[in-house]
Length: 317
Ligand SMILES: [Zn+2]
Image (tube, rainbow, N blue to C red; front, side, top):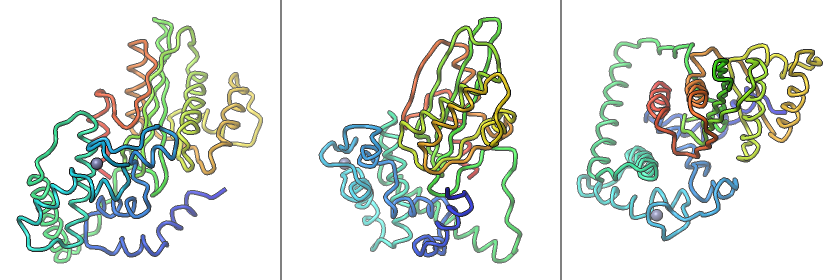
């Protein structure tokens, strides 16, 4: 099995990645460009190939299959932005286009999630301003030569490039006699691919509830055809039991075996413990399922209760 370190270094040593990494553009745009070059943006065509959905049509124009090329260039929702760009500048520089393309993609996501279309001139303005701010910051960094800030440790961290991260949590309400399960699966840019909220009645043992939740997350990853994933929860004893080779003598021993068996269908995975602060989205979903009886899976379009926190966790990447 390929380890996380091997996977990450293979990506970072690839010629495309090295070239992209040397570009003078913000990291979010490098990551976006890398995903676009490797055709791993969650376009409708790519989601069809993972058998997540059945219809590959562009959700904006409904005229063509939604490939990366269609989304970022051919679709009328992309060409209006490029036209707006040409009306303000004589020519379109490649680095400018990366910023524009990423915003075309973000606008596409907003639209399919029910938000209104952002004006193309506004997109050009945002991309231009972001590039100016980036250049100013780079110039200032050259002058002060300040050391780069380390990210906060006790928070959600995205997976390495090309990996998914799946967080799970379970919350037990003894008074009501029910358990809420929460799952969220995100790609390495923090974009949500799936979330799940499920209520289960008459099941009150917290360690067993965590074990059931981890079984659900392994199942959901398998159903989505995910091939490389970090599974993360805040139940340390359970994670130690699943990842160790020892026979599990706890009350949920059979479930631990079932989880290991389900995980065999994911080619590359690792399971790790995170503190509660790194598992906030799954925690909110589990709490919601504990308060309201539900069994809901959302694909790509986050439920309202986690939309802000997902955005907040992306913004610190
Ligand atoms: Zn289209």
